[in-house]
Length: 246
Image (tube, rainbow, N blue to C red):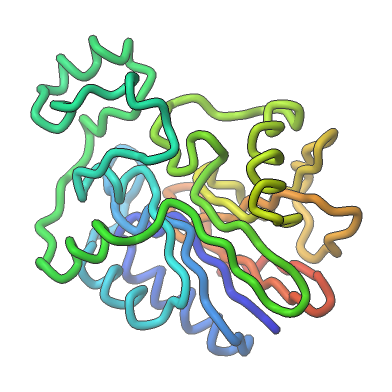
């Protein structure tokens, strides 16, 4: 079974179309999306944003979709897997300055975002998608999320840098009986892979996933300094291929 995995679209419909064209050319049984379909800021991206077109296409093509931090913000959702005392009940009614002061600027505040006007159907879609998913087949179980437990959607500004910092996520994987986890959020140029002791950041186009458990980070669709890419996961051979657009 071959699965295409995309992440961090950030409203870039032109590049998303190219990604899907490449996916179709490579022949896949399923498509998974790891969140941040929405979220556009000119500071980080130079494309013309089209949130509705991106959501429409992903709704039509993807079999599994999980929420990223930008999707939660746009749908005014509170994350289920993060301490509630860090986010007050009136979070979405607070001004930017109130949110910054309350959180000591440790959460994404989206002050630079251009907020799209979504169709009701697409807003309902963002309101309903899960914060993580477990895909099961005869070969394995795969945990899919935008980022790492307990911050599965990536609402905080901190980024993990070392394999030992992934321990909570590995425990969450074990609780869900998963030995492979795939996430986005960090925008690597090519896939990055980590086990409990080592985080492999050297770009590798094709690699076998051996000696599980493992965490794999997916390249983004969008990004000013990225060509755009996705992952091909073969669950029968446990081989992952990074596909980067020319």
